[in-house]
Length: 470
Image 1 (spheres, rainbow, N blue to C red):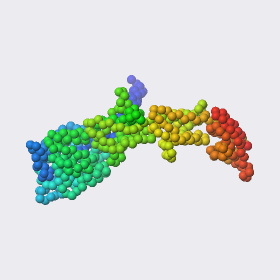
Image 2: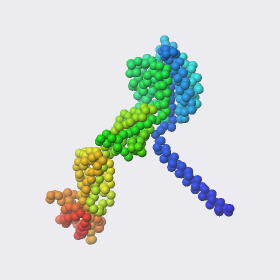
Image 3: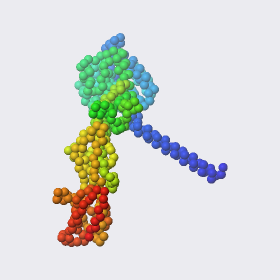
Image 4: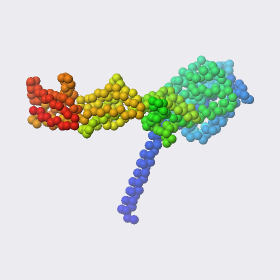
């Protein structure tokens, strides 16, 4: 093979490799766009109560021993989990009860990769001693999570008592969530009462565990929620409460901070049902259905492992402004507003149908002159059609000089201004609705008001009208 052929061959392969690289990049970008809201990493901080009361019995063993066993098991099970990091903070375990130390909390094992054995080892060495300081422990836990974007920071609090140090766990938890430090904490209450549960409702997601089996089940469920998406189905309901509406984007925002989490184009699947979507169960959502106007549903919660059906009223019909005959309009548009409101919902093109929620709307068609239609009714699965006349064409010539000129519509003897003609253009065409008009003009070079002239004209639908200004 000659050197020239070798160079051509090498360049050819180089171009192929570049094309493959770019194509892979495009494909990766597309896939990532669907997964953009899935955090890259989940960090779980186990916050363990080691106050003196943890020596109380839970069936055949002490609460602390049951907690050690089950927590060690769950840490062990997470050893092969990808993009998951663990840490252990303990409170009430270094100072004797008599001291009532309200600062007795310590990060025993910080977040890092492959620290599972360290956590299990440290768990086994813990011996309960002191008091219950939940608020301060939560406050200090804020510093345990590394500052890193695109992560889910989760606290799992295991406790058998309520706050004993005059702190406010609710306020601390709310502050941590509002600042985006952590998601709403999970609280597993051991040997709890109704008052115990009530005290923790404002702190996070509370679960009772009064037996070892309950503790095991709740702990596994909580960790599952922390790691997995769950399924949901959005029913967009028509006026008959049937889930027939579809083909519209739905945006899910995290309620606490307003962060956009997911976008799904609503789909009816091959079985005729709204398709299943995936949502992260750790968040509470606001859903915006991008109908016209949009529909908003607040405070949506989903439960891990449970298929959630989200219903929202979104009955729709179609709206069409149709121009009679052949038109010279270049993409005529009209403004759609809610009835009797000065709020623009949409600017729609004529001769193209678009969907709106069932209701009444005011239309402003951007013809010359503009046309207004009040209380146009959009009904379920119906096409509301408004016809407007085919316009005429007004050809204006100024062969000798140019003019200052305005076009007025004549309505019951009154002049309504509709259009100013550009100065210094000797030939121009105006697409205009049929009706009676006057052009009032004065030569650009004239310096007397009595040099003003008036031309009357009648525009007919689908016809051209030619006038000369001189």
